[in-house]
Image (cartoon, rainbow, N blue to C red; front, side):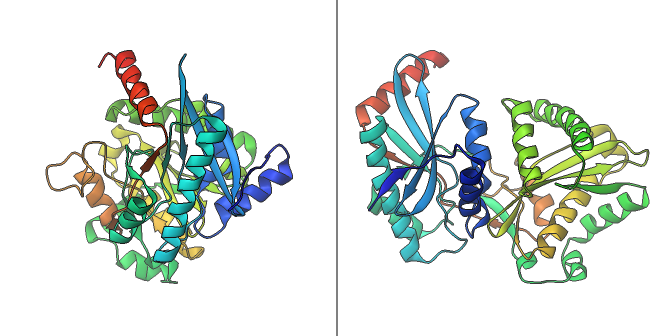
Length: 359
């Protein structure tokens, strides 16, 4: 077993890292060099390792004044979708060794990991055997909704027929009303991209305010998305209204065997007049995934305090029903787990956090 630090100081090193952590089967943009740099710019320390020859990025967060560093491995290390049980055990055991190494070398008190394992007894047993316990989620949602048909070569017509009738009608009516979708890719000129991102920023911030969720630095997030677009690892999908203005957007991520929808927003006034803009964009994302024979990952609909499948009456049921109408299936994931290295230090950090938060 070998663990060593690697440098991403050169563009060649970053390109190689991204090929291995983002583009390879099981890859995820949240292990990519752009994500690590983005989070480092917000105060985290990025540590890039090779563990038994496999790349792994760790982000370290230190408490003000006291340090007491905690780390997390965001959506990694590499593990292809539906990996065999033996692979799952190997990954969790390897992460235990990483946690112990980080404790000795960097003073970490705990390490959170989320290798994006599907939930089940195999994953649970592997985590238990490796000494991990469930922890708070690193990302907004634990679970996801997945459409596998796009990876199997299904024709566009077949995929469209698989969409619920009411959603097909919304898409058709939106098209008849003059709404049009646009794919913003690495081929889109930078000035045009910048102008579109400026519009997206406004829609995103308005959506966050309307739905009462925290965004952090919108500008930094958009810079990260644009870096991914420039390297063909993301696209910005926008919907133009009948008069030409942007009325909705959807960011899609391209990694491993998946196309993942990452963030979306729209103009609620236009939505009332012409519903269907976001349905058009999700249909566009499905077509992109089908053309590349990738799984369509439409993202999660669970939130903190409610990690179960939404039912009628739940706040997130509308979004669940919308994604399910495309044929996406609720897919439970094992979620984030923690290896505690220094229990007393972790309890102290938690206490200090409650004091700072007034809890």
